[in-house]
Length: 151
Image (cartoon, rainbow, N blue to C red; front, side):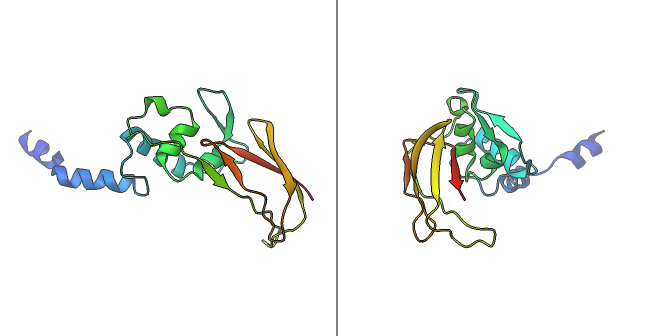
């Protein structure tokens, strides 16, 4: 019996290194919950049409959109679970980005009319510039945006 138990025991440092490798790519200051959510969504297979729900707002979010987020904390926030998170409270901050509209070959398309939506509300309209870029979209916190174009 003692021999079996000794075979199963491993040094703590080895176990810690194994756990670290599981969460490679996540922010070091994230809590275990955020790291686990990151690992789950990053390893989840692509599912066209698959959605996850923000538990606070009921908003359905494409699962593939969650997979593109760069940290478990951002994923936790997108799912409405940040109140249960034990991370060093990170400010949501402002998001300030542009979209680039491209054709099938990946070349930018100029002069395309577009509309940008957040939570099914139109927040911006315009025409892409010579580089296929929209105007900057600034939001107070993390939002999932939808871009519609007239091609």
